[in-house]
Image (cartoon, rainbow, N blue to C red; front, side, top):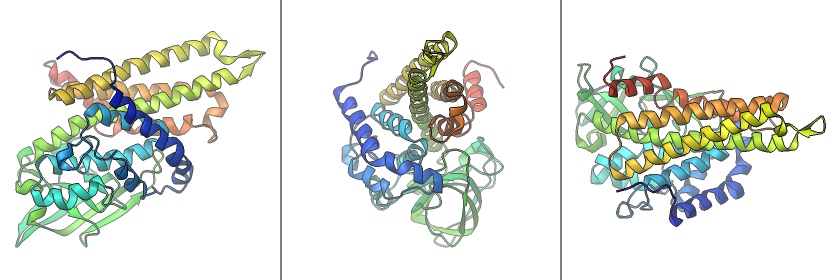
Length: 382
């Protein structure tokens, strides 16, 4: 099947819906959420009402029945408004529930996946650890079988939505050997007496609440072992690969927002009776930014199309994520330079966007990790 570089009428309808939601309902919430570093939790139910949480999932499973392209459109438009809002949405609608949809038991789907689609329950994904970073194979949290279930011990770091989530997917080793096959996922209801969640303060995506979790003798019943099976490491990898395409769409939204702000400022700011955008130095910056964004845009939606075709591989996902995230960082930096002194004032959005853009050259696998994946795909061994 040939790839058509054209969005369908359904795709444009999704984009219009999210844009109107952002402009009319969500944008007024952003400043207070950023300043207080508290996410407006009721927004999840609004997303559920509009079918935006389930956009990626089939109608037969309670979703909206659209495709990965639609999912990326939602991400792009939310990120254009606020990366913090998009991050909380992503951690919930993909990382937190995609594995349950993929391999969960009927009971797990009924009690976790379905209420998450409506926003009744909020999810998160407990994977990253203080000592592991982007290296999933270094995971140390362990799960020991006990009567009626499992006992978890360990720690998790940088877990989005953890301070207010109803449940988390938590990765832990069910066997002592340091092999990927020993890593499994557990659904953990919160609060849990064995989970101590500390809210972190951040420089970027401030409105998206993030937690450090200490886990000590936390009991999880047998029915909360994902899919009722041990060794769900391949599910984690598949989830991360697809989500790398998704977060690339987040980065695209940030880049667009920074560019539009810089272009508007370059049109309005007058120096020596001339718009600064008419000076070659500024015009060239804007030209480079526009070209970078266009290139990233088609990489993102090519990656989304590959997901829909069932042909996405780890190296393609890494290339998409690498280019889009680095584009967001570079474009937002140039936007600050174009604004000059105004670029570091909170009245303008470009400083916030630049802080937020750092998230995705680090999170979901650093740029260095993406380069390693790409290099290994070429036959090298970095």
